[in-house]
Length: 558
Ligand SMILES: O=C(O)[C@H](O)COP(=O)(O)O
Ligand SMILES: [Mn+2]
Ligand SMILES: [Mn+2]
Image (cartoon, rainbow, N blue to C red):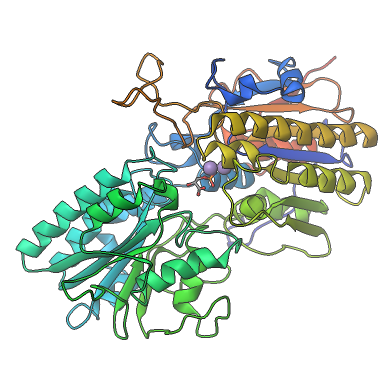
C-alpha cells in the first residue's frame, strides 16, 4: 500500500513462472489427513485420485495447518472451519477471526463502549433484551463462555429483562451435549434472577432445523425460528428448557430438534419479541446468521410471512456482511479482510470461475473474497451456484452435487474462457457432520470422483491443478482419548464425532502446465492455509504482495 493509502493492484511478474495456464483450485470441504483406521472415512473409501496425488509427496503433495492460530483462531484447541479456512485461503494472510475479536472485546470491556451496545442498551430500562444464537462451546459460530460474559455484562449495565433463544448444536460438538449446555445456561439465569434480573430461556430448536440455514437454501428453517422467537409460537410448549431438550431428543438429535417455546403457568409464551425490545444475535460467524438478520432488519422482506414485524433495536455480535452492511448495528467490528487474492487476480486480468452447490456456494465466493458478496468485475468473473437438495440430511444423498460441480468445472476449464476455475466439493464435510460413517464413506468416494473430472479436464487443456481442503472432518468420525483410542458412551456405544477436527489438510499441485522444477519448498514446515494464496498467484505467473504469507513453492533449476 502506498503512503497515501492507495492500493497498488498491479502484481509483479514471477521471474520464472509463465502466465496463461488454466489453474483449477479445488477445495475439498472437511478433508483432513489422519492415521488409517475404520473411522477414517477417507481411508476406508475408494479415493484413487486423491491417493495418486499423495504419491507426489514431498515435492507435489504436503500437509498444511488448517486450525487454531494458523487460521486466526484463539488457541491450538480450536478446530478449523469453513469461514476461517476459506478466508485464509483467499486472503493469503492470517486475520484475527470473530471468535478472537469477541474474546478481546469482552476482556477489555470495549464491547460495551461501542455504538452497537449503546443502541441496544437504550431499551434496557423499559423493555426486554433478547439474545439469539447457537448454544455450545464449539467455537465455530459462537461460544457459551462468551454468552455467559455477555449476560453478566448486560445485567451489570442495566438489562432488567432478558430472554435467551437457544439453538442446540450437536454439529460442532457431540450430539447430546445440548442438555448440559442448557443446564449450564439455566443455572446462570437462575443466579441472575436471584440478583433481581428477570432472565429466562424463551425458545429453542435444533440449529439445522431452526434458524441457522445458510445461503438461502431453505427459508422454512428461518421461518420456524421466527415463529418461535418473535411470535412465541411453536408446535411444542414446555415450562422448562432442560425438560424440553430431553423430551424432544427422544425423536431427534441436537442438530434437528423441532422448535419449542417456553410458556408460563397460563400457557403463555414467556418471551416473544415485541415493539420496543432489543435483540442481539450472539453468533460471531456470519453465514448462518445472515438470513435471520435480514428478517430482523429489512422492512421490505418477502422470503416468508413474518406476520408481525416488531419495531426493535437489533445488533449482531458482528456485522455479518460488510457489503450489505448487515446488520447495520453490531457489538464487535468484524475482521477487515482486504486485498484478497481474488481481487488482486481479477484486477490483473485473471478470468475467474467459481462454483459449488448452495450449501457451500458462499465459501468459494463470499468467504474466499474476505466476506464480501458479489463480483469484483462481472466481465471477468462467473460464479455458478448449483441448487442443493433441501429438507434432507445429507447422509440420505451422500453424493450430493459433486458430479454436477465436477461437470460445471470441467466445462469451464474446457471452454478456455477462464484462467482460474475454483470449486468447493462439500461431501466429506456435509455428510461427515451427520455422523453416519457408511454414508460418509460414500461421500468421500463421490468427492474423489469429482476431483478426477476436474484433473482430467486440466490434463486436456495443459493446465495446472491445486487440490486442497479447508479443514478436517471425514477423516475422523469418533471421539478419542489422548492416546487415540475411540471413546464409548456409558451404554457402550461409540462416541461419534460429528464435528471438524484439528488435523492438517493435504495440498497437491500438478498438471501438464506446471513448469518443470516447481516443487514444494522444504523451508515452510509450519505452512498453513494462508500460504496457499501466494502459491496460487505464482502458478498464475505473479509474485504475491510482500505482506502475504509466503508461497509454498519454489522452482528448482534443472
Ligand atoms: O455451519 C456448519 O455447518 C458447521 O458448524 C461448520 O461447518 P463448516 O465450517 O464446514 O461450514
Ligand atoms: Mn468447511
Ligand atoms: Mn463443516
